[in-house]
Length: 51
Image 1 (cartoon, rainbow, N blue to C red):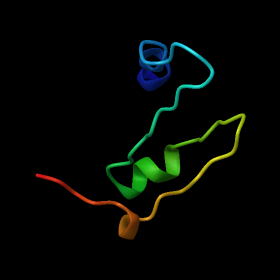
Image 2: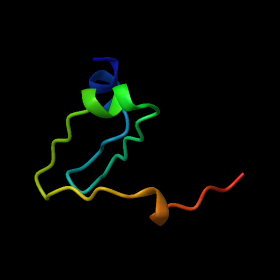
Image 3: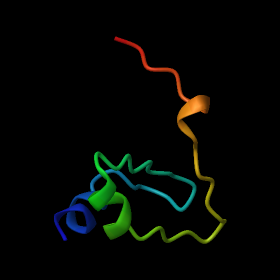
């Protein structure tokens, strides 16, 4: 539950967003997404990795 404690440091208004990027399949299964305005799942094909 460390993530829950840390999120407060980065949210200053209800307009802010946080993107959680799971690092493995286990993380994906453990992740719960809570949102008042809906969620958008971003697929890998929509992401550009920059070195």
